[in-house]
Length: 233
Image (cartoon, rainbow, N blue to C red; front, side, top):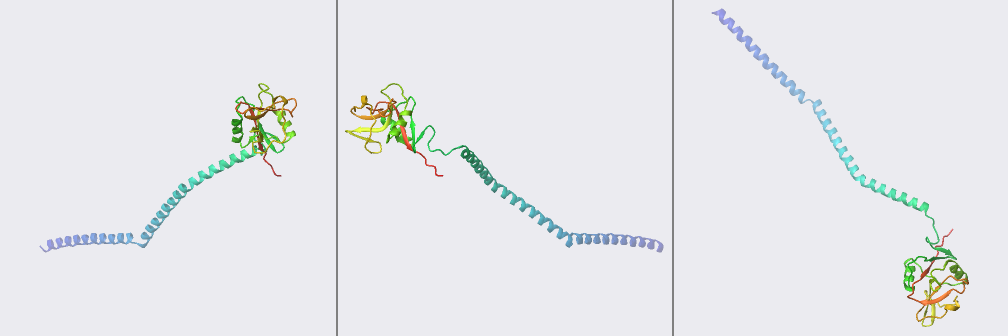
């Protein structure tokens, strides 16, 4: 009996020791794991990761902000650059001229002689000149009359010519700027004034005898005059 109890007691003791060892080992392992999880090194690594993540996100936000705010500015700058380039190219090929295209320069004045087929009355011809920043021509010298006669080429018949800025109203002959006529270049055959007298010039062998009266509603070509552009050196 004693031997049996002794053997049983020994097994019980061994079993208890094994349980104790297992519990002790588990407890020790748990403490080790807890110690590792709550160690200062682990906390520092987590903080570093969070800081780096915040920096990356902030950088991404800043980059997106800069991109979307500078893109319209770049587009506008590109547009302005293209416009400036086009303007420079235009200025490079454009000359600064005293008269517009199809106008003729003479003694600081620019002249436009209409030579098309859409003829106008005196009033409508003047409107055409005014629309171009000019007026019907005022002939103030013999040299100017000779210049005009040279360019006012014959067309259609002897009754047609080019309207000038001279009229006769109630026996008073004056230019479109209000100044009275001082010297005329009338053709002897056509000096008589009709009821409403407007004056035209026509091509003549004698440039100083090339004016004639005509009814103001008659359609003719016309001559415009404007001041030339003065270019200072």
